[in-house]
Image (tube, rainbow, N blue to C red; front, side, top):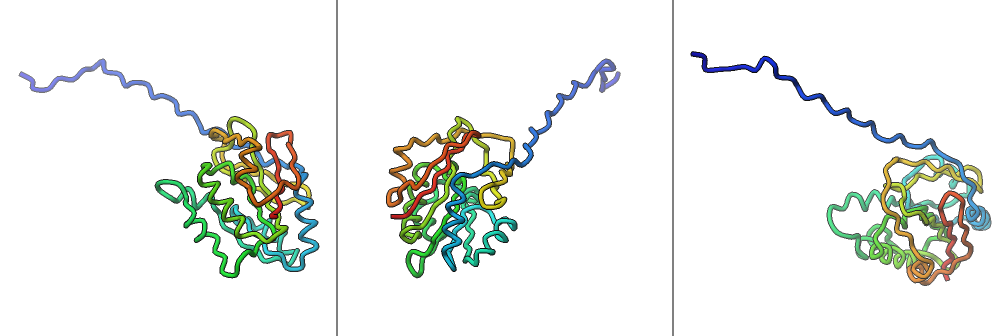
Length: 211
């Protein structure tokens, strides 16, 4: 008597092919209609204080250093993704953007960061920017108008004074916030829209000025 039996006709289930991740698009170059005004302002300021809310990119640091500016970089998206639970609150933004001597920044590069914060977080961030910016300071921000946007912020690199290289980091997407103009005006209280341009690839460029 055999205590074991084996099925000789057993077949292994065919493995399901794993689809490769979607390819990331190659970097694209787009003209910026708001950026020239920022560099024009920098050329008039001998030692501007600049706040970059994106990652530290060598090409951008080198470009801005030619203006003799003081550069502060705080990658807020990286900070946000490292917080395990809940929204970033006002105290954390105050810690990330300390102001020991009062308002200090002449220019802020917010890039497309506003699209990746909840409305509550964005209210805290813009309130901190009101405190951080000198009167007349400029804030450059890009808002997506599409229903879906890249799953993480794009890396923007300067090319001259009127073009940007868009370096998309992932092919994945997420729902876009689709801010209404009235919301932007409310969130950016204390600033006025100096100029705004809707670009053909779905980004609305805003240049805000601190009142």
